[in-house]
Each structure stands twice: as structure tokens, then as C-alpha cells.
Image 1 (cartoon, rainbow, N blue to C red):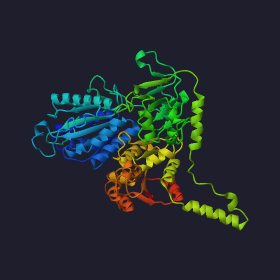
Image 2 (cartoon, rainbow, N blue to C red):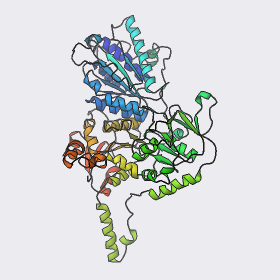
Image 3 (cartoon, one colour):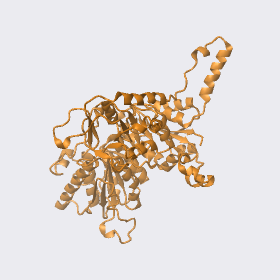
Image 4 (cartoon, rainbow, N blue to C red):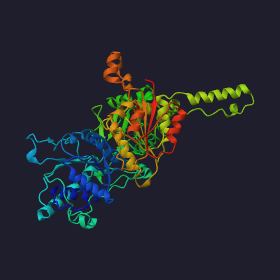
Amino acid sequence: MSGGSGLASAATDAAAALLCRLVELGVEHIVLSPGSRSQALALVAAELERRGAVRLHVRVDERVAGFTALGIGRESRMPAAVVCTSGTAVANLMPVALEAHHAGVPLLLLTADRPPELRGVGANQTTRQPGMFSPSVRYEADLPVPEGCDTEGDEEQSVMLRRVAEEAVAAALGEGLRSAGPVHLNLPYREPLAGDLPAWFGVPTAELASTAGDDPDGPPAPDPATEDEASGALYQGGGGIGVSDVPDDPEEQPFVVVRGPRTVVVAGSDAGPDAEVLAHAGGWPLIAEIVSGARFGRYLVHGYRALLRAPELGGRVERAIVLGHPTLSREVAALLSDPEVEVIALRGPGEPLNLNGATTAVDTVAVATGDADREWLGAWLHASREASVDLAPPPPDAEGLTSAVPQERLGAIAAELAAARAPIDRAVLADAVWRATWPHDRLMFGSSRLVRVADDLLGGKKVPVHANRGLAGIDGTVATATGIAIASQTAGRPGVTRVLLGDLALLHDVGALLLPPGETEPRIQVIVGNDGGGTIFDGLEVAGVAGADAMDRVLYTPHSVRLEHLALAYGWEYQRVTTRTQLDQALTAPAGGRQLIEVPLAR
């Protein structure tokens, strides 16, 4: 498109006006799936990439494209734009729209469409796209068909599109709303579907923005807080936490939690460091899911599931303060469903938490002054120490290995060999991945059996953790992790993105392994615990009801996929590891691109 064809296209003019304004507003990534009706958007995106204005990511599968953008938004907190053609292409974005809604992730869905006169008359690749995502989006618009080129009307049209872009980005970021989330712009085009770029394309940003309305700068891009800044944030809307400096404005007053009732803080998915701040301020036990981003600190409870079942601990809880979206344990669900327990939940994206029918929803919370209940906290921390598990391999017997007594030396050598050859189970796998991950890395958990094992056993560590727990589906796990890797490694930043998942979660998103040859490879390790099927069902009630044949056929769903061949077909480096020593080496060796690490597990 950098060369002139002499062909004018209203579709191209409109696509340029919209995408250029999105770039001005801070959108840095466009994820695109090819299609005919969306060709104007695609060619403008390609030109923006050529000029260094955006990073463009091309995916043949719209669901993969959507979840890649979701991962970018999860990590950067700025929306990526997803571009697709009409028809079933749009429907493939439904899972990511739902996840973005429930998890509060900023996302822009730009769907090309046929013009209104072709809707509902049997035209090819045409369905009712407007309103398809209505229950989930923060903002939606079915835009008018672009008309004319290089006219006064066209200038007004461009101004309208730029204003729509501003409204879309603001809504995706959650401005004036309860949370960030997805936005849907439906973009109908008539032929010709592509042509030369408009004459103004490429003028300085300030000049381009000057016609966009009263606010040429649009909504500012967020300035993500550092971890230290985040833990000190006071009274943020949509789930803020404060411990001092109560604001004077009555409308901004937080919900003050008084001392007295025996309290625990529950941190679900995406709770973040605020949960640890609250627990520390109140002197309360912290029950933090492994996907919460809050599993650290002095008051963290290890082995919380068993302790919640204990009558002298979980049975005596009078109040629970909830941040994030808890999904990983029945014990927490039972606690939050108990009508005898006062539940205070900070509002988040998606549906409000109200398992007991009487939960108090609040936007911000503060802790009243007073003394902490040291006896209550001490009982939990004592039990927590007893419940903690150290899964690290035992240190070598240095004295035995250097002993002059042959029997002692041989015994020490035999012990070392036994440790090196010990097979990997789920607990060892989760522990190895956790220990290999540091603050400059990113860790993504798939919705597999492994995340529950990790949640049950792993200790505290302040590392960036991601998971698609908005709806807790297995959709798009690898694609989301790829988006996280792309965003977190921007501008040469260090670190590796690791995703720990089961074999079925990998196969469900196998298309995400495909990366176009012209795109930079992110540093990503996909660690697959391969037990040959969906063993998570073995721990559910259905295992005691279904016959063995039916259980295997419709729930366990065994497979015989050779992951090595799959990895090589998609251009991934592959390793198969069977011992802890091999696993540690694979995880900590310098990572230069895409690695698939297969770990065979017993059912």
C-alpha cells in the first residue's frame, strides 16, 4: 500500500482514520486475522507497522488472535486491537470477549461487516454482528458505512471515526465504569474494499489529531505502577485498598472494616498486591490463591484448604474480606457461601460475588485503627508453618560423598543417583516451575489439574502470575501466554514467560503454536504435564458414578498425540524430561525463543 494504485476507497479512508487515532491514543499492538471484508483495515495496519507506528501480529485463527490480544492487555493494561472479517470469524471472538469481561482486561474488537442492505437477505458470510457481544462489552457501536472520498462529508466522517476511537479506548480502559473490559466496533464496508491511502496519511500526529474534537490528546495511556507503588495505592476505584489518609469527599469514603470479628482476607484471581497490604494492615491471615498475585508476605497461610476445614480455624471464621475472583477450591467457596459468615467483597469486573446471598459489595476498603487480634493471627500462622511443604530436592551428603569409608561413600552416591533418577510427579513439576520463576519473568497457569496442585502446595513468592480465571476455561491458554510474553518483553526487557498446563489444554489451543516467520519470537516456555487426558475429572464426583469405559470416552478423553512432532511442525524447540534434574536444567537454561517442554505424568 506504500505505492499508489490510483484507486480511491472509502473503506481505506475510514480504516486509516480509525486506526491512526487508536495509535495516537496509545494502542501499540494490532492482532489481525486475514479476510476479504477486513482488507482495508489489514492493509492500513500493515502500513502502520512498516512505518514503525504499531506492532502487528498475524494469526490465521480468530480465537487465537483474540486471546493473544487478551494476553497483551493483561500484561500491559492497554488494549490491543483485534481485526477480523465478517461471519463466523466474529463468532470466534466470543470466548475472549467473555473472558475479558469477567477478568476486566482491556480489549478492542474491530469486526468488518457487510453493509446493512446485505444483512438478513442470505448474503454470503453475513450474520447479525451488531449486538453479538452486548452482555459483555463496555461499549459497542455499529458504525455507518463509509461514503465518498476527499469531500467535506468525508472529513466529517473522519472526525466521527476519531471520536469513536477515543470513546472506545476510554471504555476499554474502564474510564467512568466499574472496570476495564472489551469494546466492540462493528465496521461495515462496501466495495471497493481497498485503495490508496488518503492524502493526509502520514502527516505529523499533532496535525492529524487537531481535527479530532475538543480533546486532541484523548484519554491518557495508563502509567502502570511498579510493584512498590501498587502496594501503597490508596482508595482506587473498582477495588482499591487503603490504610490511612481517608479522603475528605464523602463520595470517596472507603468502607471501613472495624476490628473485632475473626477475619480472614481471601485473594482470588487477579487480586494483586493490595490483598497482602490489607492483610498486613489488619493483622489478618491471608488466604491467597496461586493465581492471585498476592501469594507472599508475613501473614500468608500455607495449606489453606486443610486449615479451612479445621473446626478450630476455618470453623471459627466470622468475616471474610475478598479481593479478586476465587475459583480454585471448594473450601473457599464453602466459606463464602456460609450464611453465618460476614462477607465483604471488593467489586471487580464481571458479576459481583454473592455466594451467600448477603455479601456486602464495596468499591474501596480501609482498616479501622485498633489492635490486631494476635491470638487469632497466631493460631493461623502456627498451623500454616506446620502445613508448609518443602518440595526441593535434598542437598547432597557432602560428608558422605567425601568419606574415606567406602560403605559411607557408596551410600551417599547411591542416594544422589536415586534423587537424580526419581520420576516427576505433579507436585515436583509445579514446584520446579515456581522455583525457576523470578520477578522479571511471567508465569501463566492453564485451567488444568496442575493449577490446583500448585495452589495446594506452593509457598509464598512475589512473582507476576497470570491465568484466565474470569470463566476458568481452557480456551486460549498458549495464545494468552504468547501475548503476555510479547508485551512483557517489549523494548528488550528481560525475562521468560512460562505457561504450565495440561496436555488437553495445549491441544485445545494448538493453533497458537503457529507464529509467522517474519515476527520476532518471544521468549516463552510451554511446560506440558502430559498424563494422556483430562485427569482432573478423576477427582470429581463423576468418577464415582461413571463406568470406566464411559469415563474414558467422554471425560478423560485419552489421546496419542506425539507432542515432539507437533512442536517440530510448528517450529518450537522441544525437550522431554523425566527427572527433576533434567527439568531444572531445561527451565533455567538460557531461553532464546519458543520452547515446549513435555513432562510425562502418571494418571
